[in-house]
Length: 326
Image 1 (tube, one colour):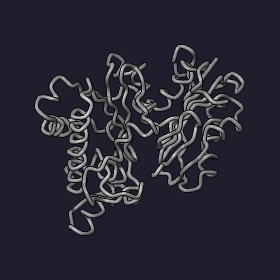
Image 2 (cartoon, one colour):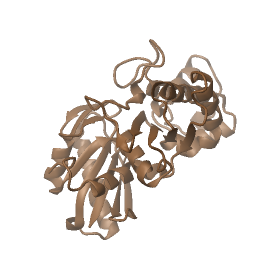
Image 3 (cartoon, helix red, strand yellow):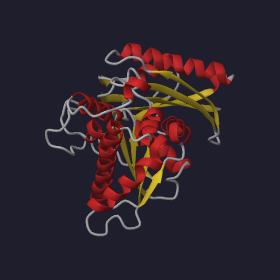
């Protein structure tokens, strides 16, 4: 039997198939394309799944269960997506829709939870009982595992570090509030800050030359190239983001006393070597006392596979438990 994991993100839908031993047998990616209209987004999820099945030469009937990670808190007992700011959708019964479409058991959870779950079972977080994950992409996802269990909280919102306020009256976030962590250090926040630097502060940049559409979206690989070319707008924006990520790490240490923090997501995966020294410096600087001593700062081992793998792994290990809806 096989299991499918789906990662629904702000810019992509990514799906994988694993076997019972956790081996990845196929993977496929499509652009999310749409915001606000869940029916259109759902069509992309279905397309990604169907094309994955086709290219993997695995029969649909042999997929035993589906797990999906979404950029939102999720009522995991009901499979309801609560609010995904970067997709501008709320209160979606996503598990039920997937069950009706594919006639299989489904588990839905926050993407950060499943990303860290994947790393905890198969990646760099495997040997830690207390670990926090921060995933920097379009927005910022977070997750907390304690004694091998995902901490979701009373209302399933634990771990939502992307919406921790780090700057009173700071930049507006997709969630509607101001000064959220992801509004500063997520990809959207970084782009918005670069736009401000170029338009209001007349900071020189090569952004237009490298990506004409950079004000709407830009790949981490281009940011990395321009950072290494010392492009001032890019360097200023990424240095600011790195400082804030470091401060967020310090806050996590101060609150939870975790053994380790794992960093992942597209931006970190592509630019760890450039960003990590600043992140670590500010993590140590803003931790109380010796709080950061011997706290490991880890990098994702699964990288782009983390969320989808975690989703597939979760359903493979919990296929007979109440977590799966059907």
